[in-house]
Length: 279
Length: 277
View (cartoon, rainbow over the protein chains, first blue to last red):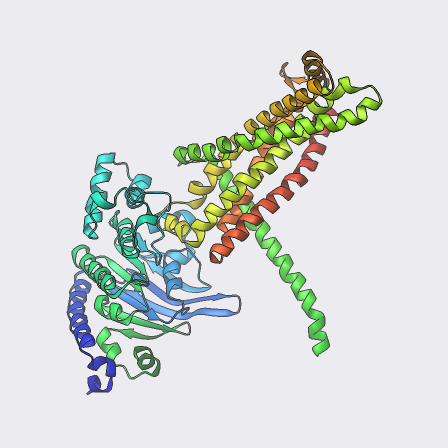
């Protein structure tokens, strides 16, 4: 009956989404049971304001091991800010950000640098280093932090590029300016993956991409989730992507989480803003 | 009530401006301290240092040669007009040598490097900032101060004294050209005149003229630090897309230039007190 009330739900496209969401929920449950020693990331009563503008007002969210949580919300809702807070790029005005038992909000600069080594971030515009080739961009972490021979580094880079469906022979020597939008996102993803982090943060991974490339990137995120079992937070305003890849979704509005639950629960929610957002 | 609000507005504006000034000053010196600390502690980015030495140092050679040449020539030409009246053209070498080594060499070199390399540093780091490349560095466990600021800082500290020596030599050569072609002085007379003025200030370690300590070492090192820190500060503080990058580049050049001229005055006072008096 609730399906009938929702015009979006009646479309064939979203029915497929629902089936996928159900399948992903099953995957999520098994992972949570495997590693049920508390949340990997825990946001507790997080608050942030810039001058007089309240950006986040008492955000609480737990992400367990192997889970993918999508944060939805309109433009300027503070979605990307949450990722920046988790990475310690900005400090909150209140609340705690616990990542693997460490409070990011009070960590020193050196502690933050260490914490970030277990995280990978895929930026909205990829944020590839302009002056470096794809090879050097992807291998940047290894060159900085790991004492490997160049042939070992090369192997890891090739392997990671293949993982994101890129041919190393074709792209390694290209500069970021020579790549398409979708390729940039994949190289950004490869760069975030090269050191095999246990936490991946995605900032609008499909924004600005055509529907086919969006689907490809979503499939890639699902593949990584299945194969590597990383814990992920995906910030997006694309409901379809969120339902496709998220075990859980959180809807952000006016600095607060208006809803959090599975994609199915979101579809069935009667809350005003949730319904408005879905329409 | 309305009157009171209107009266408070300028006060509040002044207060906000002062707060902002204090905030920037604190962050500027914090960046300077972190850069100095990163310069003497591991890891070192020698590859990046080599790139910056090439960009800031080698890349500025052409512009400082032209600056030195025309400055030396115009200095000799202008002085000759006045000195001819007293039959004192033989002292042209003294005037060109002293003013170049003590003041014009270090200051003009620093200003030219600010215009050429300082704006480039601010724009490059600013572009990295607005395209989230600086954040990408941080997320990969790399300190942007070590990776971006320190190589540019060290490169400026090394390049500025060397570029100043080039400016000084070329300016003295420029003065020599005018002295020979326009004033009928001999090579020997001009060079001896330059040497005498430098020797007048005394020597350190037997062979190094005191003027060199201030003009070729102390001032250029300070100016190099100012250019690097100011430009990197503006770059790292960039906000607001491509427009912000333009503002950062302009701000870096204007602020560095003012800092260089102000610091030059205080350093000159200090050097006179320490080395001459």
